Structure formats: structure tokens, C-alpha cells
Figure 1 (tube, helix red, strand yellow):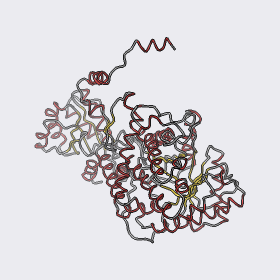
Figure 2: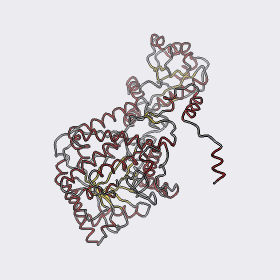
Figure 3: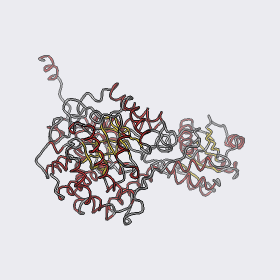
Figure 4: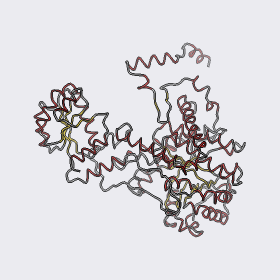
Length: 616
């Protein structure tokens, strides 16, 4: 130890300015703020490096795992979580057989979606036959108007089987507000009518949570992380208020709520979100009761469907894997991994197996379940947790000033905010400011849909009841690109885009690669080339290849030399495109050249225009 201390004393810790100076040298004149500072969608900026002194002042720095305010997790000894798979239960016998099968394949948490019209004691008995309720987390969802009936049936079943109430773990997804957000129907009367009784029905089961905050719906509609978190807190607080006002003890009310949170693809942000969620929820519960045990937040994390794609669908595995890692490192209680094929079909047995194994891989091979809060102590993540918590808390307070989450939903402000975010993200995807790997960036040039078409899942229960409210949108980010590509596939002839590469070697290759990626996003067949000696030679090769689009790829300076001759040589026998935004663009336009593609154009809008010009 003496040697180590002496060794460290031989070195002087660099100051913040010295780090900054070194970075600026390495940037070679590039703007530090633009290159190094992460300006988040949440409205705050993160620096490229932090020092010990930055986190010493943070509240999260003194927290311990398993202790209030639970920022470092609810557990002290390990980071175990439940591996959950959801099952649609049209036939109870078939659902039971599937449940028993997957329980032998690594699952220890089941989610059953039960049709309300089939709900009865015999159905529950058949569904749970052979499943030991003391060993498996059991989660249930049905029509909101029948959730109380479901609770009573479950209690009767557990009592009949002699199950120890203390060992039963699970939930019922009683969440009328989610239906209001998704269906635009006012279901608020169900809250006042049922919430107290449903909680009291399950009161003898301390680890069973009959009230849900399904904020995963917001994630699947494109919400940013701070919106997920801020609205989820307000949502949970709304139910806390309702229960306490109805006479439910605050401790019972708090331990009756389960948060089903979505996980998006912003890796470190989502780790911070789970940590910040527990921190803020413990603060809210503390206003109702001094019982610190009640302030533990129970989180089931579910990977989002918003960024999943129909084309290049195996990339979905990369998305859901990083999201699962975020959730696991964030210290949640259970995780649902969305199967990679869910955007276009009922998940196959293969896809469900892969989804299970994604979690098992993190447990059994990566040992994510062994260490509590691995992220704790990271200067960056501690700062990110605090910054996100502050931003989400501002949003929470804004909702409370509107009269609470339910009032905001009835007024439509929540729906409007989420829809505005969704619209902005779709616009950014169209302009490639937000990348969708395999869709608007690096698409698979030769892939065909092979009959795959996007699915839009919807629940129709209680469809005809209630007054009209605003609804949130649930359109996946890649949906417009997919519609465009499917439109191209259905065309009589798939357009051929030919790269007429000429001049400066580095520039023509770079622009040809950019153009191929740009145009292949619409499903066009792209033909790249090594280069031509003259534009006439390139035009002849393009026409021989049956080109519908000819893209001139060269350097900005050379477009003044090659642009107009190439356009004239083509003589309107195919659409002519310049790859870039050269200084001579106005001269080229004056000669009749209309089409330019570069990083600043709206890719989606441009490709739609090209389809229209090509008669697709």
C-alpha cells in the first residue's frame, strides 16, 4: 500500500482546463461545443468528461443499494430480475401449455392477456393448472371494466390452492388512464368505482400489485426519456391520490402500483432513467407516508416497438439487446424483450426463443445479475441521472399545476405533447437527423419484403363507450420509409439508380456510397461503378443498364465541368441527379438540372417526389 501511495504521489492530477486544452489540440480546430458536447433531446447538455469534484455534490453519490431513496436499486445482494414473456390467452388450455413449456426454458415471469368475455373461475383454473404461484411471477391484463372481477377470481383460486399470500408475486394491469390515452375514450369513472376495492381485494398479498402505470405506451409512441419519466411519475401520483382519497392507507397504495416502463435505444440515458425513476418516486411517496419500505418503486421494463423495423428485421435484435442491457444495469425488477418480428407478424416460436435468450445471455454469460448498480459511481452516469431527474421533475410539476395527470389527459395536453414529439422525430428521421439502421441509413440493397407487411395491433374492448378524447399516436419511426419501399416493390418495374462516377477518386467514391444508401432506402436497385473517363461513356453505360435514375458523383469543383455535359448527354432519357450541393448549383439549375441529393435534403420527401416522377 505504501508503494501505491508513493506511486500516485509522483503524478499530479490534470486540472479541468488541462483536459480541455488536450481535447482542443486533438480536435485540430473543430468546434468543441459541436463535436464534444452532447445536447440531449431532454433539453440539457452533457460534457465529454467529468471529474470527481463534479459528483461529490450530488445526492446520488451518498446513496447505497437497497436503501432509501433507492437510486441504486431496491436490492442489496444481487441484481436479479425476472425474465418475463407475455402470452395472449384466447384458449386457456393452449396458453397453459405454452406457459408450462417456456417455464422450462428460462422464463420465471408470465404475463397473461385474458379476453374479458371468457373470464370465469374455470378459465383461471385451466390457465394456471400446474403453475406454482409461489415460484413464478404472475401478471394479468384484461378489459379495465373486468379487472376487479379478475382480482376476485385470482384470490379465490389462490385460497383454494392454499397458496402462501406472502410468496405470491405479480400484478394486474388495472390502468384506465392508458385506455384513455390510446383509445380516446373517457374511462375515468372506472378509477373511482374500482380502484379502492381492487386494492383491498389483493391487500393480503404484499408482493402483488393490482394497479399499473403503463408508461411503456408513451415510449412506443416516441416519447423522449424525460417525458417517459415525468409523465410516469405524474401518472403514478394520480393513482396514489385516488387511492388515498378513497381511504386506502398510503403504505398499501404505494405498494399496489407497478410501473411498466418502456426502454428506448439511448443506452446511457435509459440506465439513468431507471435510477432517476426510483429516486423521484421515493420522494413522492415520502409526501404520503414516512414508511421508507413503501417508497420502493417496482419496475417492469419493456423494450420499445417504436424503433423496430420490418425491413432488415434482424437489426431489431441489436436494438432490443442494448435496451435490455440498459434496463438490467438500471436495476429493474423484470424485463420483457419484444420479439424481433413483432412489427409484421405474430411472433414465431423462433423469435420468442431468441427474445428469452437475450436476457438469459446477460444473466448466465455476462453476469449482469451478480453486481448491484454497476453504473453507480460513474461520474458521467451520476451526472446524467441527476440532470434527467431534474428535467423530469420539472415536467412532473408542470402536470401537477394543471391539476394532475388525469386532468391533463382529459384536457388533451399529454396527448398533444407526445404527438408533437412523435411528429418531430418522424421529421428528423425523414431528414436523417435520427438514424434508423437498415432503413434510412445503410439499408440492405437487395432485400425484399417477401410478403411481410406492417401490423397495427389494437385492443377493441369497450370501443363504443365513453366520450371522445384526444389520442396518442403509435406509428413506428420507420413506418413511412417502409410504406415507400413497399410502394416501390409493387411497381411494374423497380427503378434502377446508376452511379455515374467520374473525376476525383475519393470524392466520387464517397458520394456514390452516400447516394446508394440514400436511394436504396426507397427500394431502388442501385448500381455503383469504379469510374468513367468521360460523361458520355458513363451515360452510355447507364442506359445500357436500363437506368431510370443517373446520379453524377464527383467533387464540387468538377461539377462545373461535368454537370451540364452529362445532363445534356442523357437528354431526358432518365432522371438526372447531382450528388452534392456545389457552389455552381445555381448555374446547373439554370441549365435545367433540378435534382440534388446531399446531407441537408429531406430524404423521405425527396424519395416520395422521385416515386411520383417515376410514376410509382
